[in-house]
Length: 287
Image 1 (cartoon, rainbow, N blue to C red):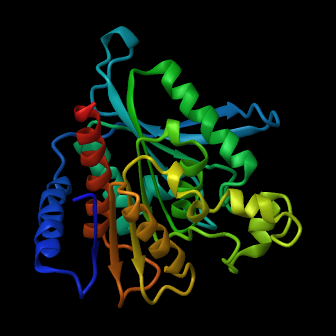
Image 2: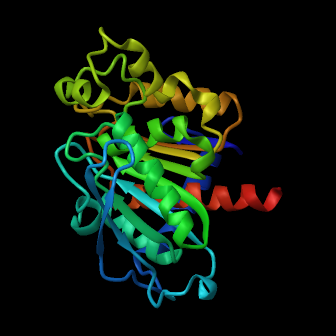
């Protein structure tokens, strides 16, 4: 099975499959290892020479010498609108806690960038910053795979970045995203500033950053959670994107909660993160 959706109308088989994912992911609630104390990293952005930041948590007992390091995967978390790099480090809401627990469980290097906080929406400068961060991590550590996740603005930005740079990302988990910036109408002042103009002025830039238009570029496992009552970031574009990805036989998981608003529970966040990690591992083993 390449993908499935959790909805009230799904078949019994799909319910059984998704239940097994959730039960397995619940193990992450009590990770065997811990993450280190957060390190606030400053770097000079190549694109405009400004000071930018990301927070890094290493797995417990991480060796300093590269020669002593085993390979580790990276989990990059992207914060929501109005927040900054500390949201996925300190916040106790389900999406943030699940990401930290998953990183600890899988001994991952955990990264939370500002990506031009607090109103990024993955504009060109935020995109270039994240490319630079990934390159920097790969130069310093023995990196296996890179996973990307986020909530709301961060979820939308995760899909955007994965579509723009599929060779850099091995799996993306998006919690309450939009996949279509041409039709999305909220937060337009911030988005136009980030993208460099309004959708009427530069529609090509909005299309470029809309994952729904580029499903063939999402070659990695993709998981998305949406709420049917979400007015902040309506779920329709994410649903359409997932339907297209299923049709082209990509590995996808959509958790669709018709009664829910603009949030993803801890359990659902664990499930979509577990999905992309396990699917990426299976994909690698088949090569």
